[in-house]
Image (tube, rainbow, N blue to C red; front, side, top):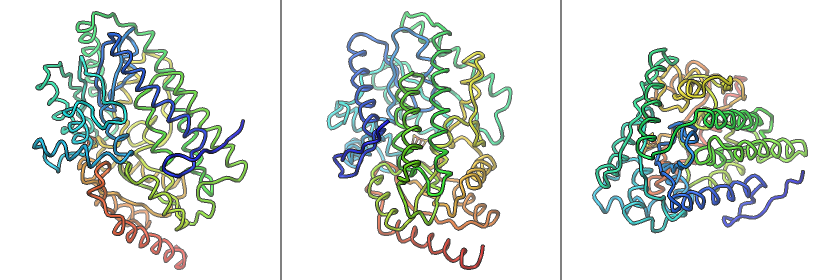
Length: 424
Ligand code: SF4
């Protein structure tokens, strides 16, 4: 296997996996538009809705507005699309994913990197990340009259309860009946089983990739894992995704075997807590290399493939695929209570040998950020680990200040250094 790098538009070198990722994403959006044009039933879904369910139908495709918003932000389009929504009267305090999406949709997809998304026949949201998302998706229901299915997921202060699991499962069955009714297509559980098997393989490979962070120096930066999450949202349940993640893990391990590391002089191993700062990936990673610091992990990426509060891989056992999907419905961090959040963070800190934690308070995502002060206190007091809080917005770069951020990052590195001198 060769592992060449090519220079991307930003001037940064792209690995083979990076080049393949761009191709996968471009193909996925082209396919989506083409299938919609040919008459496929189009669903818009929130990121943690189990997309494998849609594989149970012959001709149902799905689009993910949050993923499209993240991609727009990564391409520097966040402020422009947010401003369009604000000009329509939407508050600048709303989540920037919502504002980017509303700005794009109500300007007919203009300035979108993917020419927007094909109009939906059904909208599926969930409330286990936040209720803002439900309100945002409901705007389209009111505007176009498109049916809106809301997956109601109980918050989890502790591992999922039996009754919550059954409640979620019952709603999947309602959703399936609704799609059968609206699309006229029949549902085939075996197709979902195959999709879930592909997801199992994808996530096993994803975990293998992330585990390269345990090596000193780390085989990856968190920025690599942020960008490589994208196809999990748009291509969940496909063989192509499993193959991509297998090659990603192979290539990363091969680079390490050749002595190629993203931060070769890695002196500080950090953990990032919150959603990715999509508009700062290249800039932030370059500045960190110069400081010999590497952010090697984030709950945002290692939660994929794990149960709430856990770090280890939770694999599909080949049983009823809807049961498995129901069990992992709470995999993303937002619906965890403080105990579960701390539990998984502590495990990652130990497993990966983390020196300090960067809590990124996110102006957009209140639900993620709300508990961070308490989390920071726990990390410093219970684990004795240095930590700082920085201010970001994951998609609206107008709410981010590089100078202030790096001042605090440098303070964090000094704290780590001080702790080392003290023998801590
Ligand atoms: S506020 Fe947070 S959870 Fe809600 S849509 Fe925005 S990013 Fe997602």
